[in-house]
Length: 211
Image (cartoon, rainbow, N blue to C red; front, top):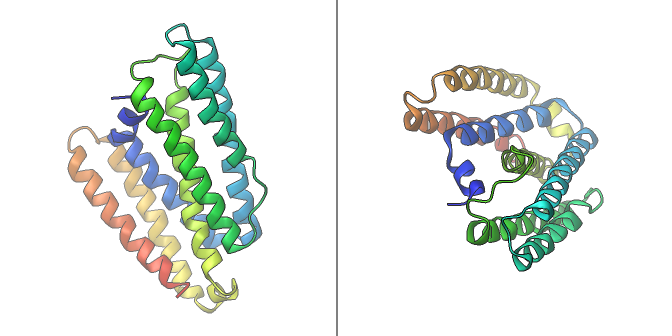
């Protein structure tokens, strides 16, 4: 199992992903569309910075054959290109950009699963950072997607009470998330199921705001 796959399978990273989703949903309810797009752009840049670090570490690695290094660099260069695309302010462009970034990331992770298993990089936590930033960016994409589906942000104004209720639920959910993180190893599987179900209920209510 590659380091990336191992991290994605860990309960700690799964809880991180749930927290990213909750934070992104909360931002969608409290910020304008322009602010939400800017959050997405910041997420893209943060992932680009991590990808740059991965590229540097791979070049410096003495554990990899030159052909594997070259193949990995090609995949990462392609990911960098997708992350460098400009702001997507229309729904079609947004969906296309999300698809391209997801595909490029998946292609690199597939290569890592096949050829980078057991590779230790100089930066130490670079794989953790890659998985974390990728998860945070995907959460921003998912939350913002509902904003593009709405005809106008005025829909949220018409449901101010519901919005406030959702915000309270999200904040309570994150408090519960942090509490359960402290005792995660004792009942990991049960906690993951509980947390996923809790977020799923909130996300369903969130989507209804835009129906």
